Image (cartoon, rainbow, N blue to C red; front, side, top):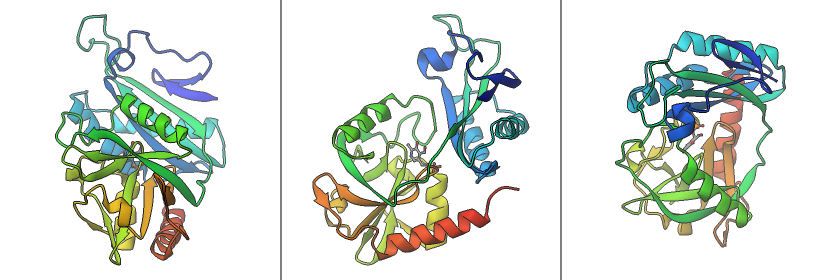
Length: 273
Ligand code: PLP
């Protein structure tokens, strides 16, 4: 496996970044996960725009998006695979202990892993911890993901693949790595970005392609929703068949099944050139 670091391709086994990289020591970094089908990325421009937004939010130097594009192309060319997940990581760079960001400049790493097509449906849990809808990092895709790691581990303990958070005022927010949609009273709804969720790229496309509406939703909407689905780069649109102890019979239901179909068709024809 070849990955991109320090401006060029390196063997993954021997590629190096400093052990004093600010991304490693304090989580001062941002990332994107981009899907690639047979070497062709999906929605790369949107991912790069969000990377730049996250960099601005964290006060990192503006990433050189042409370099990121070149890096993605080089890594994909060096590692052919049917379905892959590119991981772009951009951090504060080498910083001597106790100091703020160093002056050696940011670190850019682009790596590729195999991905697999998601199962059509999955189980989720809710967790008692909250997303902060007004924090300094709200809406930024930072590498400070430890809270998500803890929540996801709890989901796995319960035989689920995702954990859903409410925000500090009890509204449904998002999962550890996905956005959430619900069908209530015949309407397809998803929490707004003001709930504290990430502005997911799959969320935006799925909402556009299905006509879903944004709405503030109490967490207990999950107890009465007729259908629930998740969206993310790696899940695409994925039905939920169990939430905590509640089974959603027949998942994917009709609205979700249609969203899955529409998303799959549109995404397949919208691969980047
Ligand atoms: N919410 C969080 C916290 C995420 O980390 C992700 C993706 O990794 C998403 C939502 C879904 O975003 P996207 O559809 O852009 O992958």
